[in-house]
Length: 479
Image (tube, rainbow, N blue to C red; front, side, top):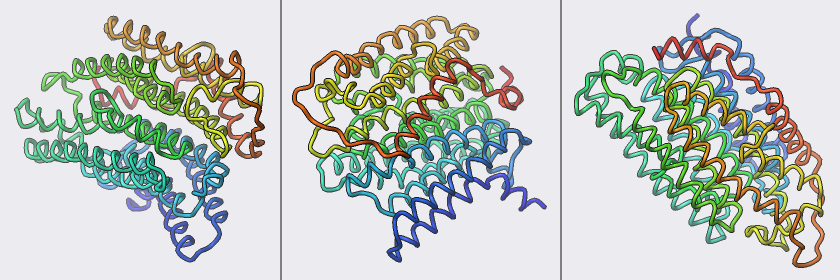
């Protein structure tokens, strides 16, 4: 029966959405937030198990071709769920310390995740738009949780205004594409597309909307302020799960809607954006003294590295991007998690890098884990960040984009400075004053240890996500 197949193909999203409704109802009836937290963790864990099983299932479309299942879509859902689950696990203690631990937070997280899961499997421009807006509206709310602080209100306002601006580009692009082809399904658009000004303008505006969401230069302006003003564990959620979902949707657009280079070759556009993004992100990160803003510009630079794989336009390039997203999720959630631990100490200010002086010896396990995550972000072997960069740069070299790969390697080398600078303060600077840090909770510490172990393991034993991905991508893209 078709409707059962449709429901099964999007079962993780359905589970997460139903859990979101339950959590919101519990909060409305003033039930305990711990119950909402338990339901959230349980729903995400079940959805993740089902999502992992789907990696080994068949591939195809569902809901009359509105979404894809298996292959790219299945891996995208796993990426989103892994990032969300770890962010929720490390959020409880942090949000409790900040007096932000309530059911509404978990409701918004679950609804945003539902949008991300839909975005990662979108096979139609209408599905893409609805999923993107479901995700974005919830993230606008989460960005403004610290409403009593100036930076929190600023983060929410900037995110909302610039997000709405980018949505205008996206929606106008979809309208022009529909006007040029009469279709919204990605493969139908590709079949009906002609190199007319209307179609090229629509595709260009659609890509501009996507560039806003992945924080590619020059559409990155919102990122540092939003990352700084959002609660840190939720910043990790925005930086990983949201970025993963959008990049997977980007891959689906490139492989299913824009695979024909005779109509328009978007490789040069992506190359230029990738180069600017890598250079600008790293250069501005070098000058940052605020650790969260440094990681925000670092996130922009990583978007540039990811676009190197997209510019390659090959199955190996797209598969490398997926692996990099997995690696980025592990190390970025871990890095923000350690920073969130330090921020839990109310009487201390850990926004500036100077405040990290001597912290490596205060709670040694936290200092070691932060070092692992930062080394991995810098791309130093044998950690997972190095493997991710290797895959995308190697794909670019094999595609003949050697100058692009060289620029990427040089930009990555420059990033070592600002990552190691944090570790210099951790271990080689003396603390300004004596203080005692609170002991991390068991679940919080265990989650970070798991992330650190995975960061090391997948660097030593890299596994390219080839489960149906290469075959699926190749079937869509004759590259």
